Structures are given as structure tokens and as C-alpha cells.
Length: 184
Image 1 (tube, one colour):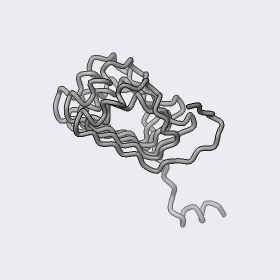
Image 2 (cartoon, rainbow, N blue to C red):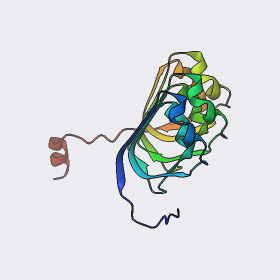
Image 3 (cartoon, rainbow, N blue to C red):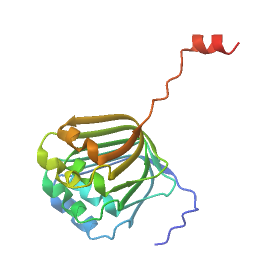
């Protein structure tokens, strides 16, 4: 199968994959990284064992995702991801990134576009073992970029010093009445 990156492509509104049994993803894990073409996707949600296939997915080079949600409640859900190099999973641009459970620990593996401006980053961890992978990184080594809102829930606050981000003001427009008065 060949792919021409210049060819027009449609955009998938939502790709939700749930793998509650390891057999659900066995065949996908045999694929090479970046070999499963998904193209342009607005919202990507991977839960349980399905989180493990993230490196296998190939996004369109111009993709800007509205939201990525990764949720892994057991250590075996991210076994394959632990084998990948840091900053090797190219998620490109995304407006909202939400990682829950053990998925918080794979944050160092993700590579975000250098010009990305994220609306919201949500990290949720209620057990210390969820953070193991992130805690062993150097301070400011997990590049996030510009973010308008950061929510570190539960124990996720413990990795704040590992994150490299610039908090920016959200786009707030003055009320219409003020805009009308100042424009005259």
C-alpha cells in the first residue's frame, strides 16, 4: 500500500478504541510503528490495552486534533509503550491532551509539535505508580509548549517540575458593548 501525503484526505471526527482484553490488540502490536494510517482525526480516545497501539498509528502531517484522551488503569496497558524511546510518539498538534492513570507515565514518550498552542492539558493520577515513568525524567524535560489551562489532578501534581510549558492567557474577548465603545 502506498500513500501520497499531498493527496486530499477527509477528516475522521472521532476514533475511539477500547481494548479490555490483551487479545483485542495482539495483531495490531505486531505492526511496525507509524504503519497504521489514520490520517486526519479530530478526536482520538484510547482506553485500556488500546493505549498500547498509539505508536502504531500514523497521523496526517497537517493534522490538528481537537482532543487526545489516553486512559490506562493497569500497568500492562502500557507495556509496549514503555519500550519506546522518549519523544518518539509523534502526536503533532492537539488542542486538548488528557492522560489518566498509567497513561500519565507515558507523557515523556510523546512528541508534540513545536508550534502547538494547547487549550487544555489534563493529567490525572491517583496512585504513585502511575507516575513512575515521568518521575525518572529530568526537570523541565517533558516539552508541552504553550498551554492556556493546566489541570494536574491528584498525585499528578508531583510531576509539575518535569513539565516544560508556558502558561498563556486564554483568548478572552471583551463584551460586545465594550468593543463597540472603544471602536468609535
